[in-house]
Image 1 (tube, rainbow over the protein chains, first blue to last red):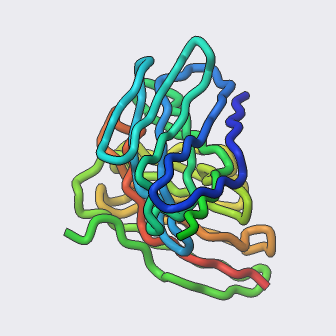
Image 2: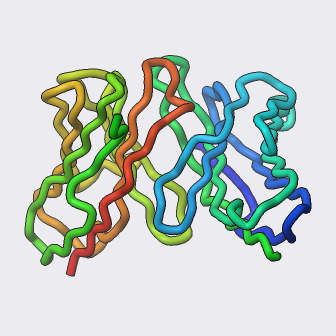
Length: 111
Length: 113
């Protein structure tokens, strides 16, 4: 089987930095993805880590440690519009690319 | 480009009724997926397709059927709706071998009474 653990809620203020952690247990691991979903909206892809290390995309960075079965999403210079749910997802399968999602972390950014 | 579109946006069904949800994508993606999302839960994969004419079961396939007659369309059917199928349904698509990067439609909100 597989499981993904991430905090259910995180709060921060504008301009701050927040880290959302994700630990996973799965067989056939090929990578860790992060998705953002605003209330009432569709999930949108943020980042993907197949190898250990840090991937940076603007204000967002994502990190993976396969030996620790752990990753995180780092959001810098937080803005009100970053208030959303963030999901980590493990990719299972090299060609089929099926994703298994965590339950999501609700991020609230206060002014 | 419209990306991924879903029809209808919202539907109310009575227990035992049937319906079909339509997903269309104009990105020429080979892979398409149907998920359901319930409060406090992540997305759970119902069925998926790796190409025209092919479908496969995901994590929660019971009570649903799918068809992929055309590359750009992926249909999700509920033959006999149950209250437990009240959910938000999302369709997604991706390039082959790039399942980590999926493009989602806006969702269909389904209420089964």
